[in-house]
Amino acid sequence: SFGSGFIHPVTGLDHLLAMVAVGLWSAVSAVAIDRRLLWAPMGFASMLLAGALLGFVGVRLPAVEPMIAASVLVIGLLAAVRLRLPGWVAAGVVGAFAVFHGLAHGEELADVPERWAVIVGMVSATVLLHAIGLGAGLALRRAGRWGALLAGGGIASMGVALLGGWVVA
Image (cartoon, rainbow, N blue to C red; front, side, top):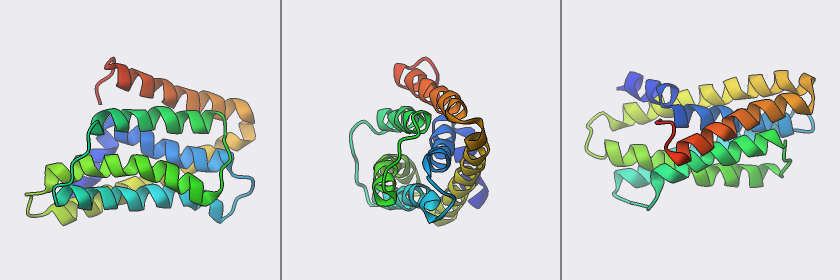
C-alpha cells in the first residue's frame, strides 16, 4: 500500500540517511538559494523511480546493497566538503546511486499487486526526506563550513559503518 511504501525510506537507515544527505548536500553546496537546489533531489527521486521500474521487469545488478551503503558514504562526504558541481552533474551523481535504491525495491515488489501504490508512497517519502535535508542544509549554511562538515561527516561515517557491516540498515 501507499503507507508501506511511504514508511520504508523513513525506517530503513541506509535509505533515510542517503535521502536526507542529498538535500543537505544540495543546500550546503549551493552558491545561492535558487533552482540549483532542486537538481540533485529531483535527479535522485526520478532515478529511484527508474530503478524500481527496472526491478519490476527483472533487471538485476550486482552489489545492490553495498552500492546503497556507498551512497550514504559518498553523498555524506560531498555534503561535508560542500563540493559544488553543476546541477546536472549533481543530479547524475546521486541519480546513479538512486538506481540501486530503486532496484532494491523494484525486485521485492515485482509480484506485488499494489506495487504502484507502494512506489508512489516510496517516492513521496523520498521527496519529503530531501526537503528535510534541504531545510537542515539551509539552516547549517549559517554555521559556516563546520556545520556541513559535522553533518556530512556524521552521515559519511554511518556509510562506513554500513559498508563494514557494523550497522545493519
